[in-house]
Length: 119
Image 1 (spheres, rainbow, N blue to C red):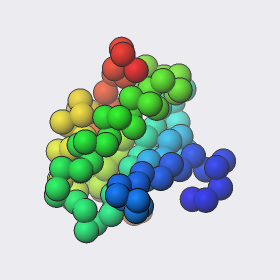
Image 2: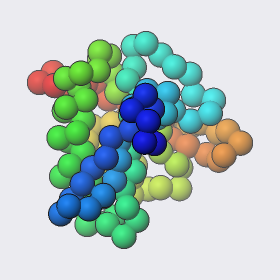
Image 3: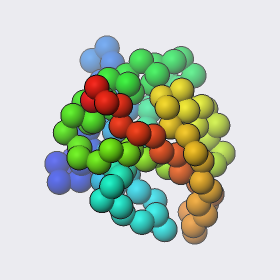
C-alpha cells in the first residue's frame, strides 16, 4: 500500500487516517476482468468510523478528483455481498446495476456508474 505504483491514496480526517481509495488493478477482485472503458475504484473506511455518514461526505470529493484524472467514462466498484452499508453508500453516489460475482474469496456485488460530466 505504501508503493505509489500500487495506486492507493490515504484519506485523513482530523489528522488521522480514516480510510483509503485505490484505483486500477488493486481495486479489482479475483475473477473481475480489466476493461479499458471502465475505471476500477475501491475504498475502505476505518471500522470504528462506519455508520456516521463520513464516507458520503468524502467519497463524492474523492470520486470527483479521480474523474478529473482517470480516462474512462464509467466507474466501477466491487463490494462484498454481505456489506449492505457500503452498497447503500455506493448507490447513494450513483452506482447501480448490480451484478453478482463469486470467487474463492466469497460473494461480491459489482456496481457501475457513468462518470459525472462535471468531473
